[in-house]
Each structure stands twice: as structure tokens, then as C-alpha cells.
Image (tube, rainbow, N blue to C red; front, top):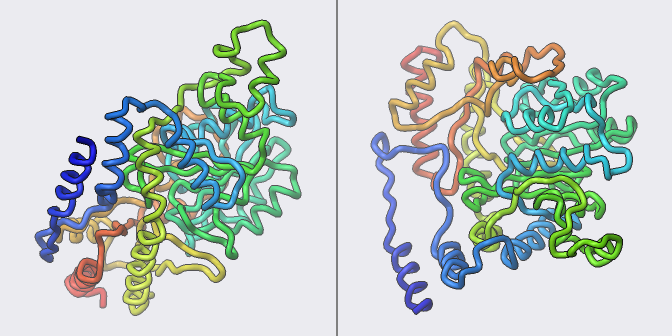
Length: 419
């Protein structure tokens, strides 16, 4: 019966069709990227009643750690949980040299709330620094300026899949005895000097949310090559339980407590499901294909927009990096012809979905009134807040769609007499 179900699922997906009609078919910011293999693997778990975290999650963890080039991976239920868990490990009293309450963690002002909120959640102080306008990444120079005697960690974000300057950020971290946490939630497969982002820090975090390069619908991952950090992360993922620890028998021998229900630290319930693991083990094999499509799209757009360099900041791949283009950013230079709102309204009227670059300048978000934080001068973040947007870039956008998007931008510029 299960073989018959799998055959029907495959037939279902084989019959799905897509036709792009310029101006009528919406070009969304993201598109579902799974098919029959993921669904059949998930159904296998459901039909065999093995749905909580188990063998498929462990298999995906091993595969992803090998892909990034680190020793340990700990899957969780979301990228947001990955950030919170990583920071909770680094502030755990069981960790020698832990970050204590009130410690400062430097992170970029242009990011998503789930980079900043977890810093406050663990009793630390986010320090927001400015970005580089060309890359949209955290500026190493501004990071160094923001150092204080309370700084305990750096938390760079590889924004939209563009690798940060890990050489300089690593130098700053090493020179000041700071933890380094890479928020790689938008950067699956990106590289810096031939090495995968997510392999530089004490911890790195990834998101497998529905809109990301690969998806487990919801889901996230923490990666590290430090066994002590990995073991604490495994325990804290599930209430501080010893169940998933490699040295659980040794730990159990120290206590006169039923080892099946022994908790050695505080923790959360951040467990993923086998359904998420089932998706992950098939999605990872498609990641390079998805990255290739995104890179082709971005390369085309950057070449076409190069002729309008006086109107737009054209974002490009930096030398010795591999940009994986989670989205394609468009930054408008100051002009008296049009505003970002004008461009957004025009593109949306042509069925091209847009959005701000993440949450823009987080320092300006009302929620930050409730977060104790420090910030330096943020002129570039403020500029991006008002002048940048990004376009969808995913596996469903091919030659016809990407050319249509450029034609619409050129039509808009002619309409505004900006060219």
C-alpha cells in the first residue's frame, strides 16, 4: 500500500504545471521547492508512526555538518530557536568562560528581529553597528569602533547570502577573546575564500524556513566544531535532558536518579520532528541546483543594472566569495525623480512582489523601545531603511521571469524620465 501511495504522490507532482504569463503570473518572493521525495519520506514517518525527533533528524544533522565542514550539528524547530539556543549555551553557568548577564554582543543594525531579540532574551545587550552599503553586511571597521570593556561576542549576519568579511571579524574576535556566532540563516552554501560560511565561528546558525534556500517547512540548525558546546546544545534543546548526550552513561553514574529522566541543566523544548528531518535529507541534495539558479539570476540582473549605476547601487559578488543571493537587493541612490515607494508600487502593479531588506534598520523599529541596547551612528542602515528593497530570487525564476523583471524596471525609469 505504501508503494502505491508513493507512486500516486509522484504522479501528483508530475502532473503539476507552471506557465509564466508576463504581467499576469505573480512573481513571488519565495516558492515551494519540495516534491515527491520529500512528501514520500514524510509519509513514511507518518505511516510508521515515527514522527518525533529520531533517526531522520540525526541523519540530516550528519549530512549538513559534513556539507558545511564542521564536526557537530544540532537540529531545532526554527532558525529563531537556533539563535536563542546558541546564545543560551554561551551564557550557561556550566560553560567555563561563559558570557555573563549584561555582556555586550555586537551585531548589525540591518537584520531580522530574531538575531537581536535572543541576545536580550539571555540577559545580554545587543550593540547595533552600521553596515557597508555595497555589501549590506556588518562593517568590520564599525565593529572595531564599537568594542568596549563589556564586549563578549560578535554576531555577524551573512545578509541575503552575502558572506561577511570573516578574516577581519575573526581577527577582531580572536584579538579580543570574543565568542563568534555566525548568523547564516540566509546563507546556505555561501563561501568565503573557499570555505563555507557557518564554519568560522564558535557557533553558526541556519534556518530552513519555507522561504529559504532549502526548507524543512519550519526548522533550524546549530553547527560547531566544539564538542563541549555541541553537547550543551543537545542537552538544552530538550529541557537539559541527558538522553542525546554522548557521555550520558558517565553522567548518569554520578547521580542516584533514573537515568532515563535525568536533567543536568535548564533548557527548552526546541526539538524538530521527523517530518522536518525527512524533508531535510532530500532537500540538501538539491541545494547546489537551487544556488546555481539564484546565482544565474543575480548575475543577469547585476549586469543589466550596471548601465544604471548612477541610479542604483548595483550589488555584486565580492572577490573570493560565493554569494548565494537569498534575495536580490535594489538600492536607490538619492535622486529627485522617484522614491522607493514609487518603484515598489510600480513593480507590485506588474505582479512583481517586493519587500524591504529584512527589517531594515532595527534601531528604528518600535519594538526596540523594549530592548536594552546600545547603538552607534548608523547612517548606512538609515539609508537602507528608506532606499532599499529586494526582489524574489528562487528556483522558479528562470530566464523569462528575470528578463521581465528588468523590462519592468526599465519601463518604470522611462516613465519617471530617470534615464
